[in-house]
Image (cartoon, rainbow, N blue to C red; front, side):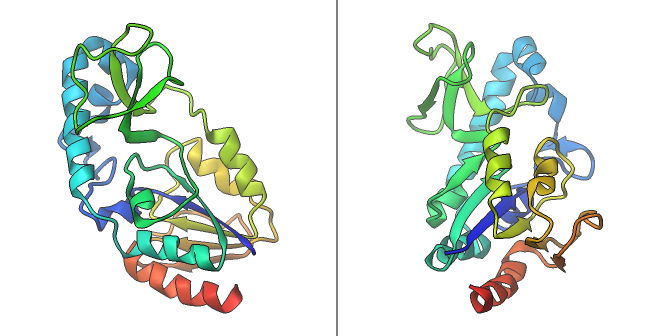
Length: 229
């Protein structure tokens, strides 16, 4: 079975009603991202940051996987699908995808304020101030903030090297190091890009662009992939 490696971004979840990480005005849900998505913001105002992610978590839990998520899950019948996502929602898993790597963490888990590798499932939809990890420090969202390392990037790079087919869905390739993962995909591998605004991929070989939103574009791509499975 061929290995289909998929890198997904905010565009795949937009059709489920989740706003993209950064809107055209540079804000995320009305906040400057540097006020809610950096270690410095957490140190400066942990209550604001905690409340912000508690609200984002409620939005994620209320959202449902869309057609694009479902198609990726369905493709497991024909391909060995491995998804690398920049998204912090759990919609891939809820759609049924079995191999998902979250580069930037997942909002349905908490982590230790002292040691990022200590993570816990969240009971309910909130992390409360005063909830502590086993080391005795405050629990925070399991989300990689600007200025923090991306622990799963090396694992993701290894997976990209193994791709028989590579797919980008709903990502502008603007956030590094995730944007550099396509460079690990072998030149001979067929690459597909699904997004209304195709990112700059001209220097890569064997690229087919499908300039559509995720749902429509993935249906077109599914037809192509099933003919080539």
